[in-house]
Length: 147
Image (spheres, helix red, strand yellow):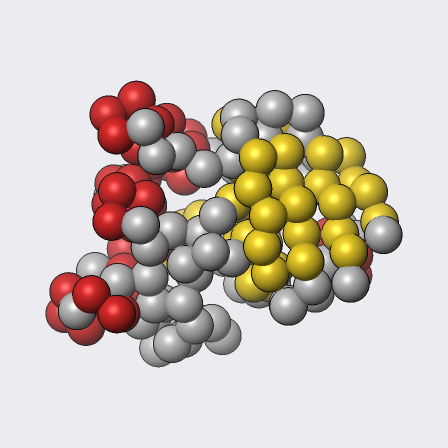
């Protein structure tokens, strides 16, 4: 078991298998494709230029460096939360207002926010690998990696 201390960005607790990428995520490119209309594909990354192409976020702890792209990022993330297709939690190296806005709005409007922890150290991708079990605490910034 490894415990990491990040910066709490948005509260809550979640756990699940890690889905890790060293590539920034463009939520607009990943989730605004026609395929994402289908119920079983709503949480699927449909950006063919991304290494997580065709991976489903639902129930995972998404670990990535940053969100890039459109100001629509927050709205797409909020929609994933509303529909029940979002990751369980997020660990990001650089949390920006566009990414966090979707979580805040999903909680305020629908009671469905997810925890967000910023862990800016470069060892993030050595400490957490895809598939390992991760617990994320958005209240304290604590990340527990098991498995």
